Length: 364
Ligand SMILES: *Cc1c(COP(=O)(O)O)cnc(C)c1O
Image (tube, rainbow, N blue to C red; front, side):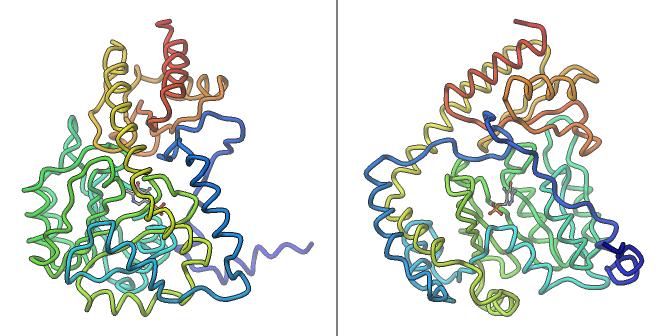
């Protein structure tokens, strides 16, 4: 094949040329504790009921473009405040992209605390937005209120993203600090509540008070990562504009059907979530009991910890060799040197991880 290199360099937008594609490591056969997935499947009879419904799904037809049934189910079970409208995305990643397409362009800026969620930066890049990251407080990863407010004044961001709780640090920011940011922002503030199920705290009640506020969630971390369904709640006038950038059939027939079905059985997910929160506590205490580690408390379904200086790569690799896959944060951000992140799995998976970690540290 002839090399299209010259043509590519001429045609592909510079912002895209300079990007790296998002890398997902292979995980076949691994104890997969790298991506904040819920480790539990469904009870057998639920599975049978679901299969029956899927079996008669009209795959020859386009999906309902406005997902009417699903949205009504979501309103009933997911605490969508009265007066707020819902926008659905193919994962909340797609909602971040929609926000970038609607509000992005030259001289527009995204501001977010860091270390934070990588997609804010990546999507700012390809929607032509500047990206400003305000460092969190070293030590406890809390919002640095003064620095954040100063950066907002200086950069006048079109969008501020606050992940609440934050990924990859696991903490939920101080509510007063978040409110100060909302009040100071000249543009939209998106509260990304991807880990709402494990934290219970939300800013959705503040939607009525702040017209510049949008609250985003996803069903991924609560146990439906394979469906790809995120939702944004906010003032109908905002969502009317964002809807224009949404492709008409972005939520497929199988996702609409399976999400509706799941929400009819939301108790199953609530039980799994409660289990994961209890096991998070167990795992936190186990990690905190290892002298070589620094561990941060988490209100999400993962725990971030620091290993002895210079050992993160070797420990990550040694876990891999024992078929335990966690996330290496070391190298991704200056404040995350020597840090690793583990998703809370089943009790068996957590124990296997812990044993492999202690072997890697030489404490076992
Ligand atoms: C996982 C995650 C998301 C993305 O969720 P999807 O709905 O799976 O796209 C968004 N925000 C944060 C902070 C996350 O950790």
